Length: 119
Image (cartoon, rainbow, N blue to C red; front, side, top):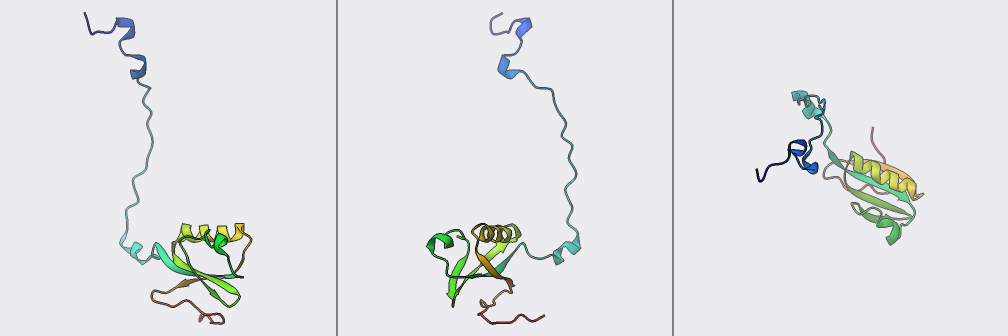
């Protein structure tokens, strides 16, 4: 009969099905009411670096605003935890002298040199 495959070759080669495999999975984590007390996913950070960073070094931190305060460069920006760790890893990889990392409260100004932290 036209349009039918011979018995020994019912399916074209590309249509042969692989044996099915089961992938074991767990139910997703259901959010409990007390999960609302966790820290927000992102926060505003201030990172103080010793020295003046030039345009090339500043281009390594595109998500951060910068300003010079005396002999230091201050980076500020909103980062989530992986973003913060990425910025800190970049500072280390570039061999920069990290002086301070501070999480800023909403609406707070960038700290000036010599400002103290209250406990």
